[in-house]
Structure formats: structure tokens, C-alpha cells
Length: 150
Ligand code: RB5
Image 1: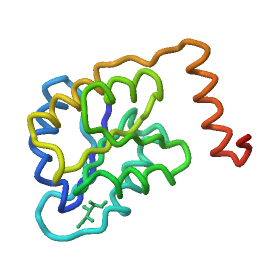
Image 2: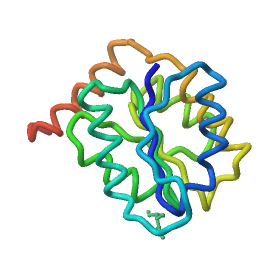
Image 3: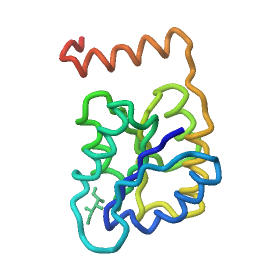
Image 4: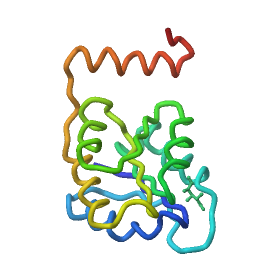
């Protein structure tokens, strides 16, 4: 898969570890930075990665800030982008299977690099659950996005 990645200065500590997972699994990386410790604004990176995924340029995205919270809030403002903040492997698998989240968010100041690698691997290796009840719920999320929530 083509995977867009984006980090702020709080998340860049996980950069090398997550790139290692992505390349190890044979994915192609579209790198939106940042690459160093200089302070940047997480919404800029969330927008770039979110738009790359929502437009179809990339199939998945990975965003990392200090907590993952800012990245997930910002990415979920991009229509067509469904970002999940992940802190454990079970949630990572559920995010892919039940929610079909197309962007994974992690916290570089919260999650250690070995756990972060395991989380990303669990997320990328899980397959969407196409059962009707899950699809119905995902469709309702899309309706909210269109302003038609119940
Ligand atoms: C930057 O200091 C920090 O606020 C950011 O990385 C992130 O945690 C925001 O949610």
C-alpha cells in the first residue's frame, strides 16, 4: 500500500521506528515530514496526510504528535479521513476491522517505540470486517459527515 506519514516535533521520536515497520511490510511511504526536533504545527501535517488519504493518493495515513490527540482531531476535520488514536494492539486491530479507519494516530510522548511498532503492525495487517452491521454503522458515520446524522 501507499502510506502517507506525518509527524510534529512531539511525534518525530517515533519516526524511524514507524518507517522501519512500513518498509519492513513492503509499503510505499509518502513522507510529509517533519524530520527534526524544531517546533511545527500539527494541523499542517494532519491536513497534508488527511488530504493525501481522502483524495486516494494514499490508501492509509500515519500521524504522530506528542499525544496523538491533536493529529486525530485535526485529521478528522478532513472529509473522507477517518483517523483513530491508537494506544494498544487490540484497538489498532478494531480500528481497521470495525471502523475501517484510514489514518492511524499515535503519541510520541505516550507510547514507546516497540509498542508503537506493534500497534502499527496490528493496524496495517488487519482487514476490514464487511459484516452488514459494521457497514451500517460506518455508513451512519459518513452521513454525519454529510450533515445528515440522526
Ligand atoms: C506539541 O507540544 C504538542 O501539543 C503536540 O505534539 C500534540 O501533542 C498535540 O496534540
